[in-house]
Length: 235
Image (cartoon, rainbow, N blue to C red; front, top):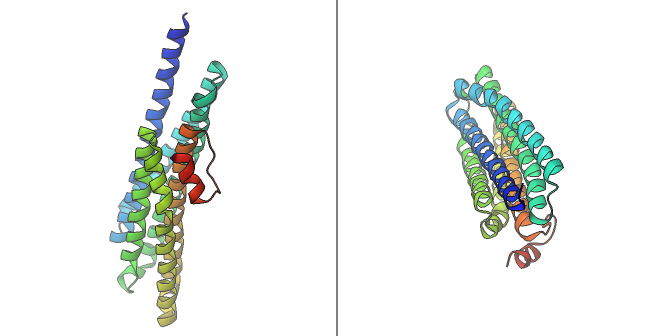
């Protein structure tokens, strides 16, 4: 078999793996959106759907990881191809954890519905929704950057990460105020704290994906380094 034929097969395998990663990304992005819809509308049915999808996300992670191991063992890739496979392995781990966060939000929604709190108390659910919008936009940008291997798009995600952190901090202050003014809100407010933290983690995982894209293209690990240094790597 010619080297050219082997190279063509390898490229096809890499393309297939990348397509499945994007499919997995689309699924977890949908999970997050559904989880927030369930919270905003106190929909137990939608929350159940999110939790049910978790099994599929976990299965996809296992299947893709298994195929990655097979490709590495058989092809023994080097340079950028090896970086791509390593980064994909980390990427699907982050995506699986995004799915976990979505399921965590859905379970919280179920608990809120079961306690009947939404019908009796005013809570800043819309603020949680805005934080979720920021996080899902970040996730969508990271997936788009992965599809195109676009380091500039990935850099945008890194620069905007602080917005989610600031929104989270503001929401924490508001929830503390709610609890101080009306002790009846304490239990539900604590639940929303966990929801807000789960959303913040979605943003963190989107940031991790963006860092992996820069690693694939530039060959430099930009985790834990100042933004000025990241910009220097990308430029």
